[in-house]
Image (cartoon, rainbow, N blue to C red; front, side, top):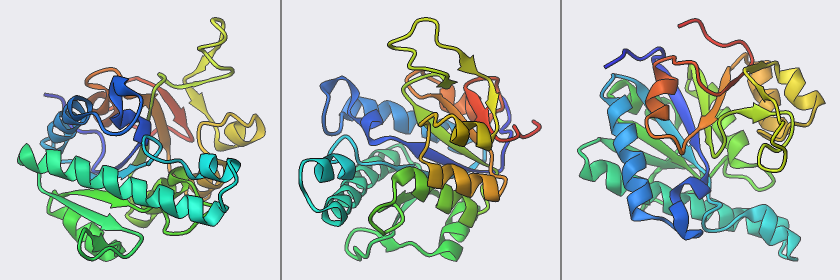
Length: 242
């Protein structure tokens, strides 16, 4: 098995990644496959933190667009991320992977509060730290939460797992001639409004020189390939030397 190219990694998963083909909620088969991949990279000795969105259950922006108060909608979305975090924890623990869930919102019966130094100690002990609740504040996406936490814990890289194999100049589903980029600067993403992450998240990565790899989660083994430095996806910022 290849060696890990990074010591500490933050993996950002969309909530939709957990729903599989059923279109809503949490697919046991899908989350089981995902957990098996996480176990594989954890066994490489990587210090791994995971941020999960909640879009498979509830999206705050969608709730707000239907007339709900935006702050209320975002808080409901944060609760959805906690549901996903607990589901992932349960499956990982069944596979023998030590985990801790930390939440940006106080839920003492379900998870530890997010404390940076405590999260770092868990990582040093090779526990997978699942970070729920986004930033704990409305009006911020889980991408921003992932960027914030990655910078706080000193991650070497932010891995953004998506449904496509990188960043394109147009929608590859609608345009067969769409061009995939191998590398982009942070300013390229912001100037061209590429929508891969929100502007706040990209700006935070830019300000702290945190590289981002956008890659396809649906291809089995891609989490390991990303962590071992294989040439996949699109790098935003300067790709680390591996």
